[in-house]
Amino acid sequence: MTRGGQGLARVAVVVRAGAAPLWWLGAVAAGTGALVPGLTGRRIGVLAGAALFLVAAAVVAYGRRGRYRAAARSAARAGRHDVLQDRAVTVRNWRRGHRWWLLLAFLAALGTAFAVPAAGGLLLAGCGVGLRLKAAWIGRLERADEALLWVRVDWLRAGVGRPAGKAVKGYRTTGIAAGDAAPGGARRRAPALV
Image 1 (spheres, rainbow, N blue to C red):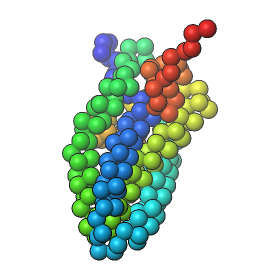
Image 2: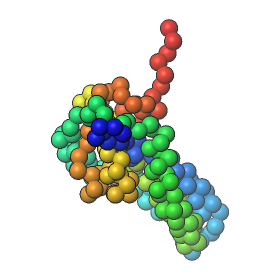
Image 3: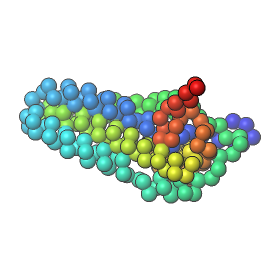
Image 4: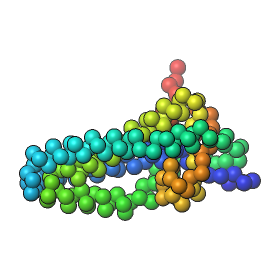
């Protein structure tokens, strides 16, 4: 970074970074947990897990939306010397920073299978779905405003990768075509050759 520029990471990419690991770890834990009869029995465990899945997805998807909206409304334009972080780097940094939490969550989900089969895994998977839905919602905000939302990388380190955490003082914006991620944090598709 030169001349006072900041490293910036896409808000939607940071939110979406945890979706896939949580989904897959939850699915594996739920599948493994369904093999164990548990204290409650498989049927009750799966029904409880389905309810936890829906609740977790809703809570994660709708949580802190006001904070995201407020930060988006007051976002400043990114400077010409700000450095936009690649999508792959943002995802890798988030997953490295959370690898131990992901492992502990997976082990806890497996452990709960002995009491309530599949419930812990479905809860974990629901959190992953909620993050994906939240990233899609951020993508709709970005499309409506025709501006991508970015957060300073050093603020993410202080807030352990939370783009709406207390360490984040505000967002920056760029045009909708900036960076290598589409609105919502997905990989940007290459334009079709005509």
